[in-house]
Image 1 (cartoon, one colour):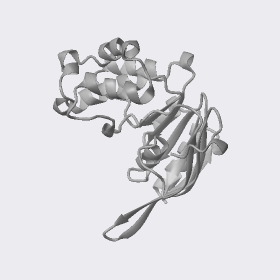
Image 2 (cartoon, rainbow, N blue to C red):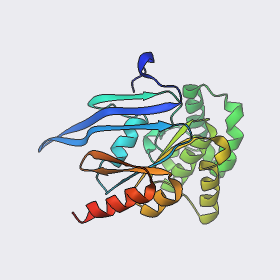
Image 3 (cartoon, one colour):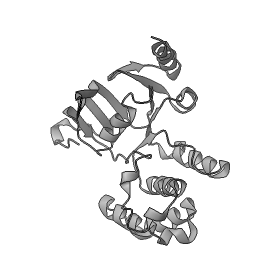
Image 4 (cartoon, one colour):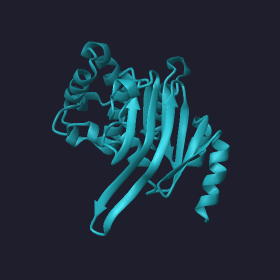
Length: 229
């Protein structure tokens, strides 16, 4: 992710003219084509797109998981990893050791967040067992707890909201969209109801192109048009 001082705007995450291409056995595939967007503090932004439209690719780029082929991504605030991205963990380490590792990366004191993560994730004795033995739900709970423990300015969400039973889902929702924390959120999804409920404005990703809309309802209307075109 670009960190050049002259191009970083404090309190913003900027995606500028980003293109992402992959080489396949059938040739080069362009997943994202000259995409631009800006996330500011407090924004609740949605990105709608069909399965395979490049939504997950875009959010991985925004989280610094992989680089763009061209263009730039600059962060003037602390941005989370994508919540659905399992690569945040070292599977041979325990949940606790993964927490220690992430605390070192982000410069957070372990004692400040350990009790929160252990209580929030509800893993019991598995918190001290290797992550490779976790179910997908347990990994998701740990990922969510770690994301909430670190004081990120912007949370990236790749579809993963429905984690665990209804009680745990409610706890995650309350923590994620707590207005007191003033965080930005970026939610990528093909679920119209999620975008309408949680996002103030939205984009639609179609064939690698990103289309901006002033409201979630406008984005959803355009998205439905593209489904049948």
